[in-house]
Length: 367
Image: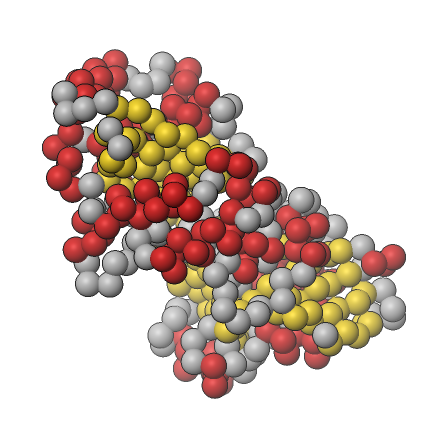
């Protein structure tokens, strides 16, 4: 561990090996309200240990934790904030962590633990914690490169419930699909959460992916459970009871055969759709739609206010009542200005200094 006191003994910055307990403490109370960003989430399936930059204020109060792992060829020394690609990747910033405090940490020698280049993303472009990190890093003389990572589609569940969910026409189609599918055998939903998670559940979802369109791709991209390694990654996440309770699945069984599923993450009032799939030979019964609408029904019943369906494939999302919500971005923090100029050709344009960027907004004051 590298530790040093800075700013007249007010702040302590430390580079800690692994994903330390401070992460879980900040997950319970952070500026963005992301309770799922726990040590087990960052460390899932990692063969090599990570490293966490921890910032503390007066009386040892936790201010920030930036976990990272190796990113790209090891010789380059680049690192990234880990975690599942969706819903987002982000460090943990306490509400009381100011830009000045964070910039001190990012400019200190201990920040060398982040490497000469480090990545946050994909992440929300409008996240207050991310904007705070960007401004602090710029003050600490890092150059930040940004590239767009899509627009997330979200459903206002309160509005959907008020309008009467689902629409009569949609409900009619879903009931017809259920009846036709039921002619093939007994149907039941298997709902899993918390202590209900086990290896057999993950294997059922892997079986579905192995019989889906994903299996026809050359690299199986998009699968979450198809291989033993993928299942082991999620099993390590589910060993954390707090995350096991936040993660849920709805699996449709035709007799003893799993045929479609939705895999979701609850984070405060938001339900994130992590993954869904269905077996291809049952495609004609619209079983993928049955799973998606089951997830939405469950979210409404649980009192969730937003269903976040992620980026891409807008067709079925718009049919579910989703609208474009917020932009996602992928950020690269580069110490050397020369390296930043070279990487900008591959990654994206450097961000303007945060304060200058705000001045250029319509209606902003100019001095």
